[in-house]
Image 1 (cartoon, rainbow, N blue to C red):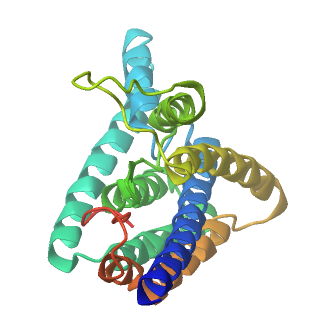
Image 2: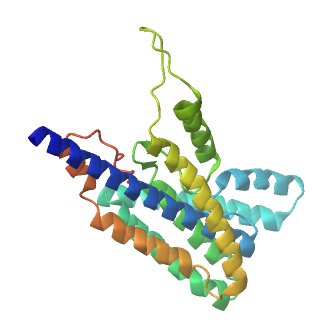
Length: 255
């Protein structure tokens, strides 16, 4: 009877954890898509997409577009600095929610800069790029899934691979052959939700720019909700481990 109760308790906790991980994935993806859209609208560069900015850097150099070159170079530099600062904070605090609070403060500081400061582009650029770097530095794993919520290229590849592994590929049963373990439903859902929520965030950002004066308040609100959620449910993984379940949470940079 005790064994059955332990199994039921473990199943309930796993279900709860899966919902928590998906909820956080959706929130982080939405924030990144929203902020990148606002940043591109204001600055014509992406605060959190360094692959595209690096390509644009080469194009600007070839075209001798010094204004775009300087903006792109500044974005990459600010993002890199934000990554360093985020790494330092993470190594000292070791609690992702606290670093996300710093990220929310940066977004909040960028809100009046967008509309009230003369020649605000370098300031806004620095604040948004550092905020995106902190999000990427804080969270690189959600559950057992390596995922980067600031960009979506890898998420699409992880999603495609997980779909094939889960639904379109039967692992070989022959002993001694190299096989891939079948992804769990949550390992399929997380990268898919990361991409979908990023897309929704981008659309919401575009609509908010046209509708409200301070669109960055929306992602700030979502970040605050994420921080509260992470602080309230910080005990989920230890409980799962005590119950004998397979650990789903990541390392120090995971949720």
